[in-house]
Image 1 (cartoon, one colour):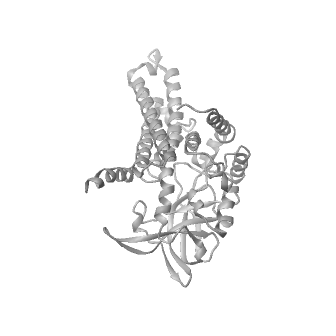
Image 2: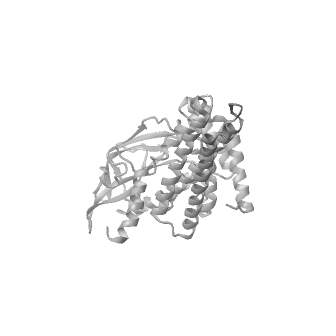
Image 3: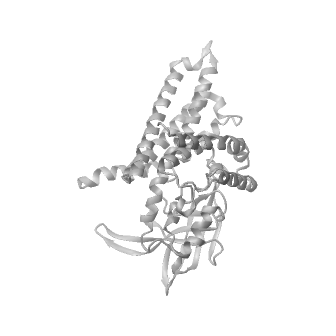
Length: 384
């Protein structure tokens, strides 16, 4: 992609920030399994200094006001390191733009400034990809709502100040049968009946935390609904679609880092008197990796262009997420193979990037869910 002067400056700024503020801490964070809080706050503060913090939100609310193409450039560079580190450069969820009235000062503004952190709480123990099986529910009690249920695999860099929680608030009749009415609520940490603790530890992106949330008769006022009652899934869909594009962009960044490492090793590692890259078994792997990475970058660029025009579909986002995440895993696996035994040694970053790559095919919708979205978009217009 040809970059404008401004886009090139942005790319160079992010690249320099990564080299100075993030790369030096990768091994320590992976070894500790956490980002020391002082390091996290340092990354947060310095990202504000260079204008990267909340760059995804409009200037009208105090954000950086970057368009989708610029955000794709940023996310691609962020993908080259651990999510545990670059997540401290906050990109508050665009769902918060639905805040109204007092919600703006209480939730949106503090997230833009970094005074508060939020969680996006949708997934449940028995309702991962099957959102309509969620058991979290909220019932009316006068003007208030009483929230019950639980969430898990809710990820973030640090203990949050509040969560955007999705719960069933009723049921609607549709041509396809009864359908739960899902509503998004703004739920402050510390409310009576709301408990939150660190969840399972993942081998991918060590140091990036997951949380378990439990709600027992949590009383919420009418001002705690984000958006409209019963329109939670529609609201989340706006975030999930672009979120999948950003996953695709980060996968391209990580794949490029792996590819560069593989190419350098193939050019300098000698066996039988010549560089191993000159053997077809290795050289052809590099060729395939280069082709797949270019195809993935073009898919991201196409989706971003459609998003800027307002024509991107769920299937577009699903295709990007599916192809880019699976492309990354193939490149990661081939890089390990090219390095041989050294690819699995802790002294090199290959094994860490390989582990981190595996999660991309699962979160933000598994590869199977993406294929379901794509096939549905093909068959439904045909009546199937």
